[in-house]
Length: 388
Image (cartoon, rainbow, N blue to C red):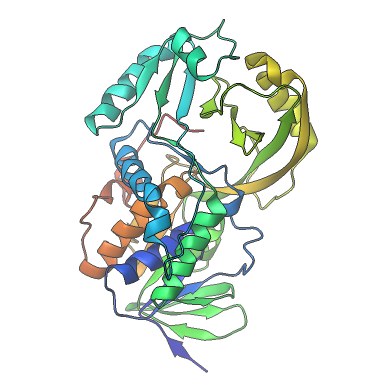
C-alpha cells in the first residue's frame, strides 16, 4: 500500500518535532508526516543533551536564533499546553557563565559588545562578582567571566515530547520506522522508502536526522560535512553542598558543570573518532573531569559518581554550525542538521523559520540564509568561537 504526504520530516527529535509543530501552528493545511526510527528515543540526541540554553554566542545569526528560542522556552509550558494541561520543561534560568583567564578577557569584551547589539543582557564579571554567584569558586588563575542571567538549562526530553505531542494534536502523523532512502528522479524528490519496504510519496523531504543526517544524504549522492561525535555526561554528588544553585558554568579548560536537581552533571568535548558510540566510562570523570572540577571548586574534591550517559553531536566538520534550508542540488530537499551541540537551544527558531520557508518560499521571522548549504562552496563560513 502506498501513501502520500505533502511534507515528510525525517527525524522526530526536537528539531523535526519543532518543525512539524510550527508548520501546523502557522496554518499549514497539507499532510505532515514525521518518520522516526527510534520510537522510544533510546538513542536520540535530544534527551541525551545537557539541556543548556544560552545567548552567549559570537556570531550574529547564532545570537539572534538563541535570543528568539529563549523567549519561546519561557512560554513553552503555556504554548504547548493541550486541553489546559501545561507542558512543563523545568526551565531553570540560573544563567550561563564562561570563566576566563586574563588572555581571554579582550575576546569576551568583543563578544559582549556584539551580544548587546541584540539586547542580550550579558555582563563581564570581575573576581568578586564571580564569588557572588559561586562563593566556593577558586579564582587565583581567573580574571573574570562572561555571564548572562537570562540563560540557563531545562529538561530536553520534556521539550521534545512537548513539541511532538502538540504536533500530533494539531494533525501531524508520526511513523515510527527508519527511512532507508530518499527517492528521486529528474524532477527532484518524489518520495521515500522505509526500512520495511513501504513507499511514501511526497515532493518535499526535510532531513532532520541529526547524527544520521549525513548517512541518509550520502545514499542519494549528496554528501554533507556532518559526522557523529560522542559526548559523555557524568552525574555526580558531593559531600558538602554548594551554597547556591549553579549557572551552567564553563571552565577555561572547556569542562562544564551545572546542577541537576540536588546532584550535578559535567562534561567536556573530548577528542574522539566519529562513530555511533553510546558507551560512557567512569574513567572519563576520574581522569578528565574530576581533576579540573576539584581544582576549581574545593567541594568537588569529595565527589561520588551516580551515573552517566553518552549522546551524539551531529558535528559540522567545516564551521561547526547548522546547515539549514534548501539543498541547492535537489528540488524538494531541505536540511536542518549539523547543529554541533546547539540543536536544543536553536530548535524553536529553526522550526518556525524553516516552516516559513516551506510555506512561503522565504524566511520572515529571522533570516537564516547565512546557514545555507551553499556557504561552503562560496567560502562564506560562519565561525563560532564560543563552542562548548
